[in-house]
Length: 124
Image (cartoon, rainbow, N blue to C red; front, side, top):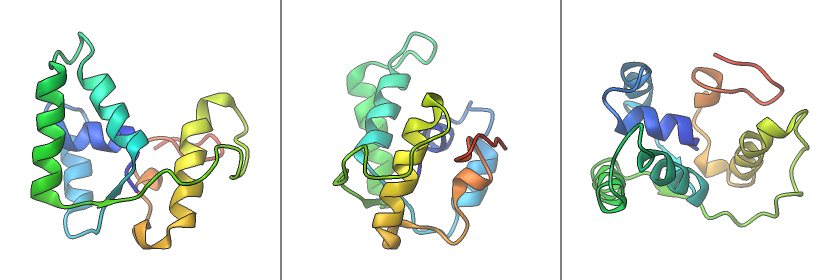
């Protein structure tokens, strides 16, 4: 399952990790959840990225139509998974727990191990 950072890197060609994440995702079965989608929309519409809400929604819709990631619903309570060591890892731990609940969404080697934050505080 892709986290917000991975979605940002895939959809923004100017992102510093676009090439790395784009190469990683080739041939993989990807999955998204509402948190990843909403995070992309929220960040992409900030002044530093500058898309309108309509343009951000179109970018996500077009990418999803072209790439065809699975959609995993957020069907787990936030307190159901393992607690993170710090509050800044809350979303990462929730996404990891959600992915574990839906094994069909798990790539052979999690993207978080190659790009972004790791549960437990590690970084790429």
